[in-house]
Amino acid sequence: MSLTVADLTRGAMTEFQEKLRQQHEDSMHRELEALIATADQAAAEISRKDFDGFKRLFHRFLQVKGPSVDWAKINRPPEDSVQPYEKIKSKGLPDNITASLNKLAVVKLNGGLGTSMGCKGPKSLISVRNENTFLDLTVQQIEHLNKTFNADVPLVLMNSFNTDEETNKILQKYKHHRVNIHTFNQSRYPRINKESLLPIAKSMRVNGENVEAWYPPGHGDIYTSFYNSGLLDKLIAEGKEYIFVSNIDNLGATVDLFILHHLMSQPADKRCEFIMEVTDKTRADVKGGTLIQYEDHLRLLEIAQVPKAHVDEFKSVTKFKIFNTNNLWISLPAIKRLHEKNAMDLEIIVNPKTLDGGLNIIQLETAVGAAIKSFDNAMGVNVPRSRFLPVKTSSDLLLVMSNLYSLDAGSLTMSKKREFPSTPHVKLGSSFTKVRPTRDAVLSCRLQVFTDTLASFLKRVFCFAGSGVFGQV
Image (cartoon, rainbow, N blue to C red):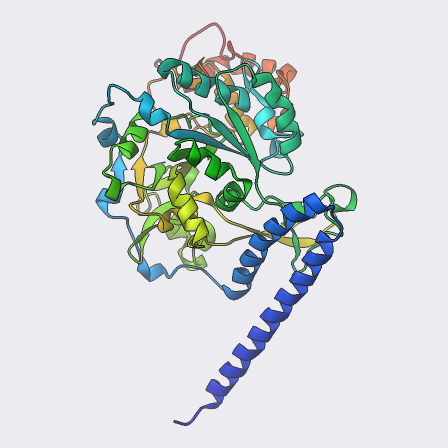
């Protein structure tokens, strides 16, 4: 068989690209070794584990080009793979739900800072309601659960290098609460110069000239970091079987006893290893990831994976009707099995950024929900919108601080006086984009004018009565 010029050219290009990829990997390895050499022995050991994960991600980044999905292979998930919450709830609860609770641990993703809301330090330490922070409310929820059912549900915080020190200082205040609290750190990865594809860090320090050189690599890192911390094995040894994972700023993400019972009541050989809570998509959620059927597996499709020609189709609320809340129920033994077999293939999210000095960098990240395709008998549960109440902006904070919601044992419940079950859409002007990490969070002096002048309007929007819209602030 004769070879054409095109075949020879293609072969030469493939060989050239392979050599170039190998050069990038060799250069990256040398740079990472040089960085490790700047750390003390204990820090170097931790960093080496982190860098092992980073190098695997970097290797895949160099190999994968273009969208990671073939659009023609995308199908809606089978009907039985995404069950309505009401069907799960209709099964009721056993007489002794305590036995199930004792096999559960709650994991909160606590790696983020409050910078997008104008605050310094961990976002979880921002006051959101009655002087309670996100972390306060989480501890109250789990303590109430443990007291009510005489259970032992521990709280696990996945911190980052940005949040770990301040979070651990605050944890002292909870030592007399009826909840055992554990922490572990997610990995620390180096930001990469977009042109050279080399780390911009000069040493392992995270201050001075290196303050912008490092990043936590997304919540998909939970599987590796959890395993490396030793906490995964510790919880399994204590009889824990599942973790309930959620973002700490999602105030709707509380332990649901009906979903827990559904997991625990399955036959051992058909045990569901992964549940993703999804909810109906609105026009405010068009960028959220959705569940699809892809090559006979349930899979999370993120907007970053979608070919440009199909982005509008992805955003459609008619074709893709649900989105991922990032409330996840995951089997601990399954995490251990898949990690030890290196069998979790999480799609890479390439996150480009421009630093303050104008340098263009990239961050390689992964999403925790992307692992759903690796677990046995994985499924989605279409939950009420009330289980998705994230606080990402001051507009969101305004809602949860108002008396649209009542607070009980750390959980927020929408007022029954509101005529519609959906959350009102509120968007504050540019004067209200930043908040302070104190009780007078939403620029209190200007907020008073805001509430006085718009009281009647807000009463119509929120559909509730009372002496003041912000009676509970």
